[in-house]
Length: 192
Ligand SMILES: Cc1cc2nc3c(=O)[nH]c(=O)nc-3n(C[C@H](O)[C@H](O)[C@H](O)COP(=O)(O)O)c2cc1C
Image 1: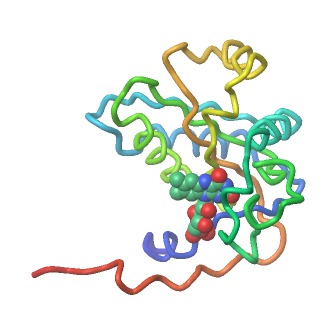
Image 2: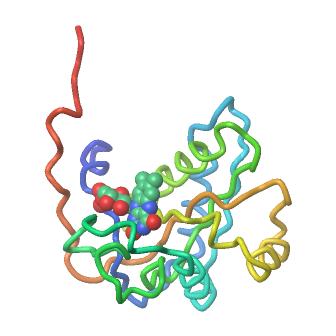
């Protein structure tokens, strides 16, 4: 598939099969992330892949621990792939995905957040090309902001000056692959 067709076809997936992804695919997705565009070419982001589904589930619950649905009343994300905003019964912010990547960036760097999300988007496209499904998930900072979270990051060897900025869930889509929402017309303009 041509790249533009792939970009248009990729969707955020929140319903996953039990099937685990291969370590080789996870390695390729992480490698793609390390080649993402990054501020000043400083390569300041860092990616940790997790293929332990019990750990992914635990992290997914931490991700939801401080989530306040009250602030999001009226928001709607997807009917086909309901998000935690759409369905209050969802307990894990990672939707039962069997694998996960955590994207870290330097705490005190001006482009810390954009660097991490550029990384994540590049990983989504590699995952799609490999026939896998994914979703960017936010609230990464608060996910590890407690004693058990800090202990886990120490165990992983994440340096003190790094902070988790976002996640990429990974797995195989369960059920029909969703259609994109129609694009808003005013978003694209060309000045000659
Ligand atoms: C900055 C950012 C944060 C996001 N955070 C979440 C999130 O916390 N949970 C979630 O389910 N999806 C999250 N998403 C995925 C978006 O909801 C999704 O990209 C959007 O609904 C468009 O759907 P599509 O990716 O299928 O085109 C995030 C996406 C971005 C770019």
